[in-house]
Image 1 (cartoon, rainbow, N blue to C red):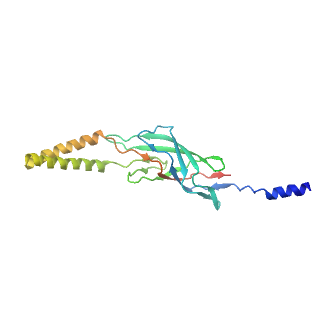
Image 2 (tube, rainbow, N blue to C red; image 1 turned 30 degrees about the vertical axis):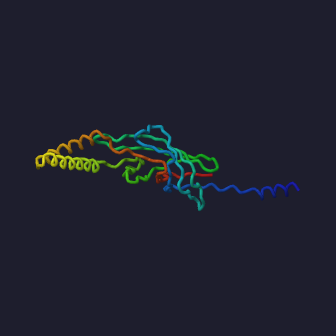
Image 3 (cartoon, rainbow, N blue to C red; image 1 turned 90 degrees about the vertical axis):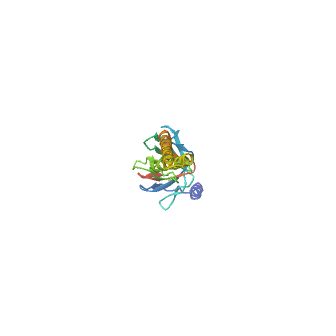
Length: 204
């Protein structure tokens, strides 16, 4: 009787799922839960994300969407006023499963949702760099030069007046460019990062 009861309990108990392994090279899409900017970020600041898509391994969903990922800012460099692009380096560290299991999770950032900002991943280490603002700077100088030329012509009504106005406008535009920092790296809440697993991850 006792053996029959034990057999019935074992038969009714759910079988434990076999461990699975997320393979090296797997892509995972993550979504930012907080915003991080080189304007304010400091090394050691935490970065919080969630999986935007499921991670499939062994023919089944090993990690469902909305699983938590935590990382940290490693390096933050602001854009310079004359030269130097903004750069941000983050290190992802842990992945928390629905079961409560926390595993080491240190993939490399492969690409970022840069939108119109032009920010991109610049090297295999996953550092994020802002694009050059030289084109925008030149456009700003040209616009102010054109405005200055028009104003000079209106006041002086001569070609000489237009030239003086253009020179003044260019000077103002150049001064503004030299006194203004370039665009910062912005990982805004809701933006996405594509990361690549660089070593297998065993999940229970």
